[in-house]
Length: 305
Image (cartoon, rainbow, N blue to C red; front, side, top):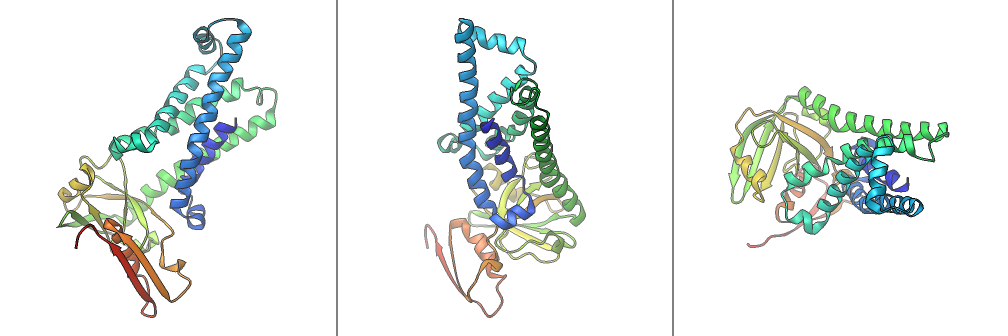
């Protein structure tokens, strides 16, 4: 129960709820999400192992026979097993060493299956859990928690980005290549409705071959205007490299803006901005946001002059 609760809380942390994002900051929320994930998986794994071990000892039969008995006797157990397998896959692929050996696209596709894992494991808790059987208030609370979580994901992560993107009609205007980087300049209407600021980032989904399936997070490399947004991406893989081949007119769906790295966070007139490598892009955009009264020092680390 605790493991599943931590799993649900972890999903809430990355549900992109605006008031939470602005108050805490996306980076911190993602860090909390990553720290909760392993503990959730450890506890749920212990639940699976210990409950099978305990019942096998009570029935005096081997573990595999007890597991089969669980799957064939209790309702929704096959779905629960599928959910557990998906959780393990998401957990294993999120470890640094495993993630370093796979592309972002592969990791994202596996990780997104955690939604299916939560959905698949839900019913066996309600139907078989001793804390829910004959406890209507407990069951009502748990169902409400899942419903609110599903609505938050559906609204903030899917409906709002689609609706906003259609409203601003964002499209690629031109692509500019530089040494090892690609800048994509996009044009739309009434982009001020997005309330974006220099220093923030979006999840970008270009409706083109090889790009439409998933979004990628890139920071703005210039302060947004009423009609234009710009990102600058370093050539670090297949996706970033292929941005150079985007055609003018390609529709763009955006999710965001995210991040608390904004000019409004400064409390003094003297500001120091530190960036390294392609991390100069949000710094470059943030510099545009300060008024003429701010003194700005920029420290930039590069691999070569």
